[in-house]
Length: 166
Ligand code: PNS
Image (cartoon, rainbow, N blue to C red; front, side, top):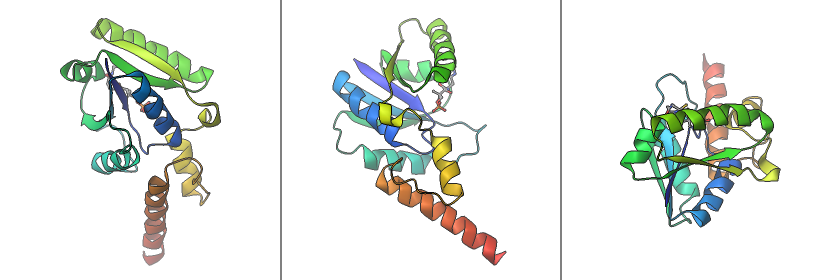
């Protein structure tokens, strides 16, 4: 069975990576699918996020990284995936995730959503939290893969250099 793991991944965190790793054991193939969302102002462009995810999952041979636009279930059908993989961190995730799973089921009954509980050590972790910490100069080395941490530090360093020049 092929699973699609959809999301924004702006940026990929150690929580996401843990889920991809565990998903890759459970499924024949996991396609990490980055949503191209014109309504969001991301920190990293989709191409950069794809590069980051490819770099951090390169040791997982049955993991593919791709991007998509539009409905997730339509993408899943095109890729012949029977499962949408999502992580559940805390109770507050549950309501939105369940709503999304039910909605997706009405759109494509043949596509199942499978939830994995996020690893205990990452259940507080989100991409937005990572960005906020980094924006205020905090340490994010324990929250994201090393290469991604470097990209984020660089991004905020360049931003603060630009501010000083202007
Ligand atoms: O990482 P995120 O931002 O929590 O991921 C949310 C995502 C991309 C999985 C969700 O917004 C999504 O599937 N968007 C695509 C549009 C869609 O299919 N909408 C119907 C399901 S609610």
